[in-house]
Length: 280
Image (tube, rainbow, N blue to C red; front, side, top):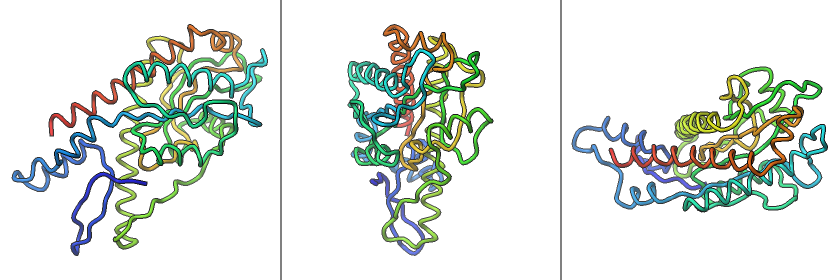
């Protein structure tokens, strides 16, 4: 795992940690007026140009995910939707990596590792869910990671997508275990804030184009959202247990609306980050 900022800790110990730029600015201002601009020119360039997005199509290979009444497999629709999103992002100038580009099985932890290996700015996981035999529930929703599910439906969906109960801690070199815990807590909290911002942008953008689940901003223990360093969301595009949603997912037009909405949300997230950098 790589980290982008250096802070001088007690006893002269140095450690490196990734923090949102707005938080870096707040720490700088707290240090005094003569240190109001701590970010270096190199860090500024990195923050404003790094636009690598990892897209994670759910399931794959021997894991089909949910299966619709019309025999539509979640693994297939997630991959199709991911390719639509990839094309939309690449047309917008983003660099894109997919955790899988074909029908193969990728373990959950490997998906997170791929994002961290590529030092992704964002991680977007694509899914379609089901609450069979209930055929009336429909609409998209956007999830962030939490050790407590926001509601019963979120908990049920997380279990079906393979959830985890804890976040793995990164290793911080050159610091005591106590300081390492503090740094991990700070980093995980800042990543959560950036994930919540991305979730808000996603919900707003998708809501203008496709049906949404009531209270679509939800959270649960999704394994693929466990990175403490990369802002991440999981988008449940629709319900395969709902005939209208399943039929819509089969169409290029519906999937392209999802891709366009998600790309607009990514644009809005990066714009907010650039604005934060410009005002440091």
